[in-house]
Amino acid sequence: MKLIINAASDKGLVRQRNEDMILVGSSLVRDSQFSTVQNIDDENTIFLFAVADGMGGHNAGDFASEYVVNSIAKIISNMPVNLSEDDLTNFLELSFSDIHNELNNKGKLEKERAGMGSTFNGLLFYNQKILNINIGDSRFFRFRDGILKQMSKDHSLAEVTGLNRNESHILLNSVGGGESIFVEIKNVTDLILENDILLLCSDGLSDMISNDEIENVLTKSATTSALIEASKANGGHDNISVVLCMVR
Image (cartoon, rainbow, N blue to C red; front, side, top):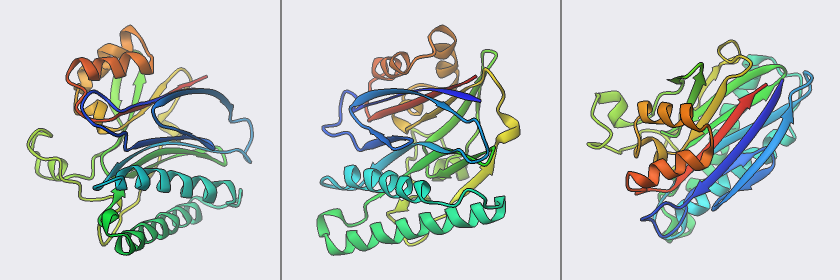
């Protein structure tokens, strides 16, 4: 399997700072673009890409999203290659729980960063499996044969209550920013085929344009720039981070 990955993160038209952070392998992307090709050629290949959307006052959101992706990238780079799926799930849950506690402790020590946290949505390629790791309301989509399918569920009040996203942006789950954390891990190996396009994004995209609009943009031009420009055309009220992964 070959992954052709294009990532871009933009502060949008309203926010003064970009509190999103993209991780692709060991590379961090904020206020920039990044492209790479990754071969998933054997069972020893471990590769992760993800989007994190930080929250908090001062520069806390910036710090939180970068801290989360940096921390998990270091953990992933040193993890064993032969874990069973159950052991892998436990490993990831414990790792994110540790990062969650570290962020909360830093917030208690630095008042200007109190309550800081971050979403996280990533795809981990491990031992010929593909796992989606979801914490918060950044999203994972699959685009196949012109049809967009949302593969992850938001951990938000809007999702639980059925409210429109415009009515509620309250998160129910994040890394940091709360007492507890829930790490939703799904094996999506059998749901991904050759020629699929995988999309990860922050809510700066999914709140600005609907799923149908994302589908239309990808049908015309499957590029990060086209998605970011569509979000800006609708107001660009938040930071916009997008990862497109073409499976070959």
